[in-house]
Length: 184
Image (cartoon, rainbow, N blue to C red):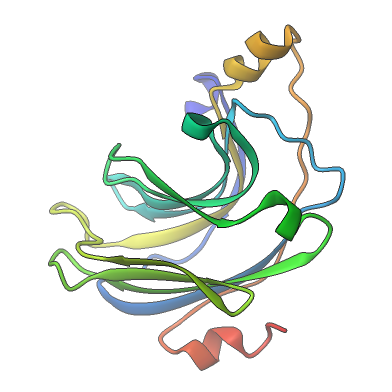
């Protein structure tokens, strides 16, 4: 467990799937009173390569720009770390937000990872989405908090505030219609 290494998590994990095109959808609700724990890193979902680590993650902080809150996609080709904002904190607080992902998982340059937020295109990556060793991907969602010491040091407090999120309609399928039929 990495939770003994300055981390906390409560995540659920889906089925493993192989190369090819897949659709993913979920709804997320961030309550009005949701505490921002910047500069601690908070992830709310990860596409994880079996045996390798996260390849794309959905985060609530952007440490390099001192942004707390919102929803950001991190592309992490094992610590390449490229972040892009897909929704602001203001856009998500106190309401359900629908996320749709269309990905082609490939070790070649024909891969892609596209994200829509409430039916609006927000992220479009083209290129390799699998690494040489990896052949299976899975989606984990929930809250994964890393580097808790950052918040403790900044605030001179031992207890980091609890965070609660809500997820609904988490789906995976080979077609867009299969994963979006229950979204608004």
